[in-house]
Length: 192
Ligand SMILES: [Zn+2]
Image (cartoon, rainbow, N blue to C red; front, side):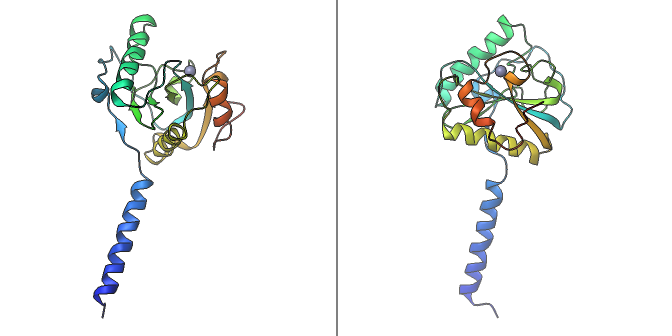
């Protein structure tokens, strides 16, 4: 017969397992409506799972709060739509210095971030400029947990290739400091 003490231990273990499974799930993603996104002018549905995760930087100021990130995200979206003629903000997701994740086009829409790779990739952009400066650890962790989440949700192949934008065209993106960091991450491929 179980003692009340044993039942308490079993309950505690169950709670620990529950918490761990949450930790292995997907991070919170700040939705388009939360950051005040404009509607996309058109969209193409993504055929999941993607083969590539492509890392970018925004070459904008950094941000650590929803209110400051909102302003930056809105200006990136305006630039992409008005100046570059894109249908929407180009990236699939963006991550800020405090480790928050912002929805760009989101899981199910083809992005406009790496020509020739868009329909086969998820584009994750680090908010800031990482040519001469490292992103925060929280920002790095957020991007890695988003990648793990993409695999667990079937949005990215488990044998995905991780690339920096500079591997797909002539560009500094995602900045030399950030690029040297992602070269050490799982699944980074020298030759895309
Ligand atoms: Zn880029």
